[in-house]
Image (cartoon, rainbow, N blue to C red; front, side):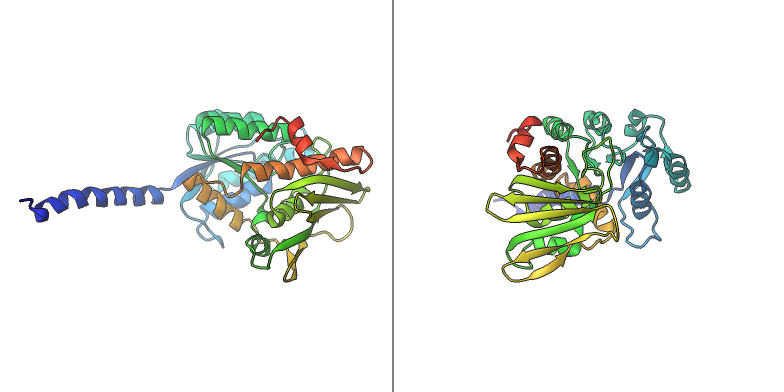
Length: 332
């Protein structure tokens, strides 16, 4: 006859040991590295993660090392690097001479370089090292490079995601989650300053476009753009017949926001909630390796913006999202 009282502890003890190990793993502080000190995001994220006195402090992930570069030819970015480097040092962050050296000391990586052009090259180093990677906006300076990053990350089984902080505004998420009713359309707006080295909306219009797609979801089929020196108006038609628009502003009073139209309400969305909600999602992603935004949605956002450039060049004609994605090398 089996003595269950004698046998039971032998079964339960390993289970408790595993549970305790898992809990310890969950509580282990992640060591994070930041690539790019040419954006205020690097300072803001570090403060949220490293300074326990900061409102909205997030424990469990600490920035320990940073590599400053970064753009080397966009003056608005390069001019920030010396000051931001000193401020990072003051927060106890080591400054690495190369990305490779940074990667030796971290578990996870924030790619914060303000200039999207070097992102593919920089991301490849992180992917090769197998480190979970968050890429700040713009994910790249071309849709083709964005497609390449996601393809190479998938092949290497390295988790990657990119997002504007505007995605996680409370009202925007409420609309996406159906709390305002079934979404029938959305008009979003944000500043849209231009940078000659990037497609027009990649540099800053991404904020409002991210709001638009957070509310509307994927499925945009075609894009039309009207453009003047001070304003862009981009309209997308979704496959179910819904229409969503983005207004980019370069003059007058500027801000972030929008309007969602549902079967139950017309309501405001896009209120800016600061960086903390985004950083919460990034740290969660670093632990779970589950991105809060799919690669497909991110690529459709950038295809929308790239299609807007094509539409502008062609005098405002409709441009197919599928065709733009195909030209960038994307396939389902």
